[in-house]
Image (tube, rainbow, N blue to C red; front, side, top):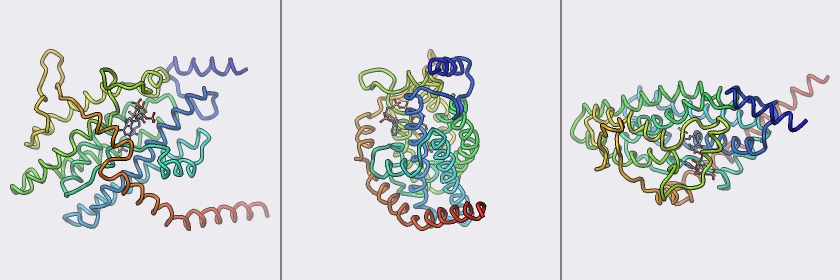
Length: 315
Ligand code: ACO
């Protein structure tokens, strides 16, 4: 029977159909999805912090309202993603424990600080821009609940990207000091944004990685380097529109390839940040753990309420 189930799984993948929670699946497929979806969910909720830092300092009431809505969207994305992970037979409390104890990762990008208001714009433009590039293909991921969650997440991310660009566009039309702030933010966020796509596919800095297997399973649709290139190609003309430079002397249009060439990414920095040694890792986890502990009473109240509902229904 197991062989039959697995043949069914292979057929679904080969036909580009969706795998649903009730379907049999290889244990390694389930594990890799839990790893990726949990890491994705953790990134959404840790990602609330760098921008949350600016809610009380947004330059106008309108900017503040937009930023609050955006940060709430990130919380919502975390919730869809933890729910999607739960369909694979794990509990979100277990996933949160693994985040807090450092056993599961979140995106490298959220370990960098937001020093000025322009950073809020740069996060929307570059970080959410990179996130969309990576997540639109995930709408076609072979695992149904993850793919469906991504549809709404991507719509919201597109709005986030536009609001980030609009913040920067406004700064680009401002004073010299505002334009300098914009340039400084782009200088600091450019390389970390390119690292978001993960380690390179080939070359001396490539690692074993999950890409080949995840592509065979229809989880990933493109390699890390392919998505990174698409992102660079999309973003360079936008930087020109903003009237800024990007901090890469090797960036130039390659007529033959029909793509922008770009310089070497500092992969040592990437692995250092992943190991916990980025500018804000300790602060991010400490803030997250404190928020979790402060929220214990909410979880207890929700559980007590759920018990009452069950007890009432049984009467
Ligand atoms: N930050 C932290 N860890 C990363 C990153 C990153 N930017 N990129 C890769 N890694 C980790 C992988 O998790 C993996 O580690 P593990 O084996 O311990 O889990 C290792 O580096 C090797 O990378 P890959 O083989 O490329 O791993 P994978 O196939 O999972 O691809 C990718 C990485 C592209 C990030 C994939 O997991 C993905 O698409 N995730 C969903 C999107 C997501 O998580 N976005 C979060 C940021 S966007 C946002 O929240 C706004």
